[in-house]
Length: 277
Image (cartoon, rainbow, N blue to C red):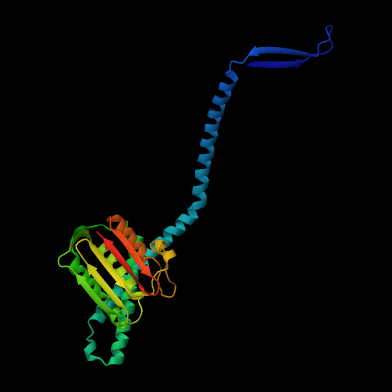
């Protein structure tokens, strides 16, 4: 509780070596120290932060410009891809396969599948890159009719893999949603059911008032990967092509519209994905 100030003294008559001053500790020195630490510490922190922000902006400018150039390139490229792919798909649909011999008809079907695959990848990339810039227009959609249209879109791929397809679709199931996002949601699930199915396998689609379930008899998903299949660039199996963005888009849209996604899968037996609205 006391402060002592000690001073060494020179030779003297009383033989003392030190002079000691004693006073009560009123803690004023402590208050002054804390005040100075806070003041100067704050000023130094502000200065370092300011210098740091300037340096970060200088160092990141080339990277920012590169990212902007790459982003613009991807946007322009995806935009330019849309027209030729749409023309290819439209012209293939206009070909009467009944008038061609079987060999030519097979070639046309392969071209159709390839063109639709490119179209699907284009739609996924466009959604990932531009979904923040695309105007959302939620509307009442007849999901029963819409689902049948999307299934017909993939019928060439279904026929090529000789997949047995069955659907139990309730009439006039309505959903309030953006049409483009609903298309991305359904297309990616059906596309995966075809892509990861075995030749001669089965796909079952069941649509009820509050749920849509797509089941296949494909290669299945390992149990330790089920939790991660909705992460971007994650693929449950490397034997089939793809970028690993389809189910990530499904998860993004499902979260936006408060749709619950359930996955049930057994290796070499198949996978079922259920959307609960």
